[in-house]
Length: 223
Image (cartoon, rainbow, N blue to C red; front, side):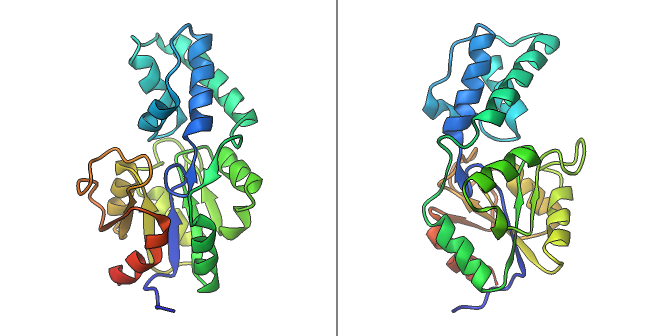
């Protein structure tokens, strides 16, 4: 068993550990339909992910002409209410997620989720999938307070604290993840299989992987 040079691994959730776009897309479409907009195709929902549910809905609405702030807020609340009841219908871990998490746990590595999804939603979904106990902490987009979610470094620093201190490497699929890791001065691995918002080689990560099965070797090489 190769030695890892890190005591803590931080994971983004959507597009990194979990394939979530179908449930997120259903919530967006529920809100769009209430607002009189056209629904987005399920595949397009994956292109909208990044920065949290509010930005996801805003992108979908803006593509169809936008809305005044007050009307948008109502749709956003409707989307959250729908998602609260339907956030683990189609959501599943990516292939090899369970094996990788078990491997890291066997090595004594602390794991922390850092997502821009609301903490309550992230914890609820992980509980539904039987994965919550794997993590020393779940840090959501609302955990640290307004303006302190990714790409700010604050949740990465909090992940280090909750992981018990020591060196951390972060794994994520978007520029939000890379910017947060860079701001926190920690290594970052880009998950190409997720909802990447940059072309291959342009994400700015220290390494890129096409499957979670490649994560442990990539972490070893970072050492």
